[in-house]
Image (tube, rainbow, N blue to C red; front, side, top):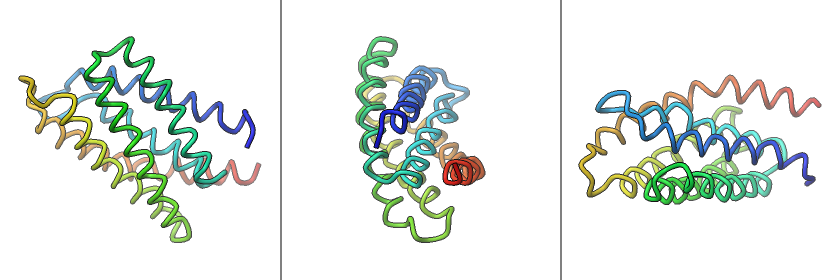
Length: 171
């Protein structure tokens, strides 16, 4: 594993976390925040790393993205959002890596889709309960809406996953 293999995915991961932490503060309606559209791309990064280089790199990218994302989020987002995001992020990313690894020998779409879907459920539960429980925000509505979008995005990102894998494995 070299610096080039880890640098771009780690930077992409950090950018996704930071963007999502900002966007989650802006509801579209009572059921949805903008962060639901950006955050699932983090699973795409992890899954591509896992398929191309392996679980060890995927976990390292997740931990680097976590550290950079948490630090930058703490500067730009409320502390509660940063802590909730960091906790949900690392738990769900490591779960995604584990599920992906168990399913990696099955059909090309099962590992990324099922790993991302399960991780999205866990991420949503952890994030919204830590970030908004005890506040005046109707977070259960937001959690349901965000989870629905995350699950749709897990399916919608499959063509991008397939394209990236085909390109990166051949190079």
